[in-house]
Figure 1 (tube, rainbow, N blue to C red):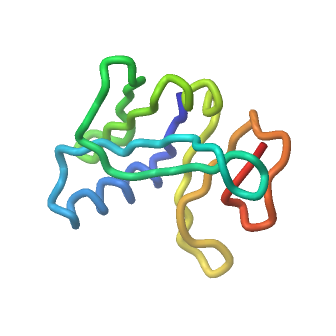
Figure 2 (cartoon, rainbow, N blue to C red):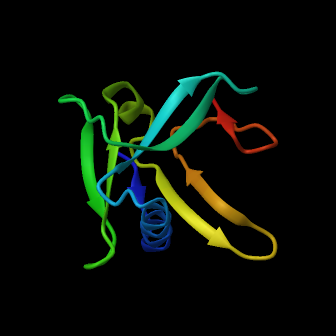
Figure 3 (cartoon, rainbow, N blue to C red):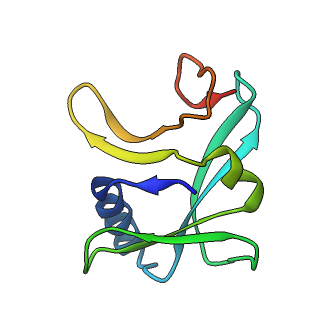
Length: 110
């Protein structure tokens, strides 16, 4: 199962509140495609399957739920979702120890 840094959890919580959808979970998935073979997909989801892996991250008062389907969970084992807001980097990034290579744009892996 992927883990979220506290910074990522706070940003996800902010986005959920901005959408007025605090009851939704962040779904992180791996899909075939991209220039390296697989790509990451993230979206807010209220449709949670019984075989989804579920976890809660963040500090008290700023927790968010994360769900991952069973097939994606295997490829995201040990991965970390972070959020950076700086001059050189801005946005979410996934550090995945299971990825043997990534593409130049950072959106896909194999």
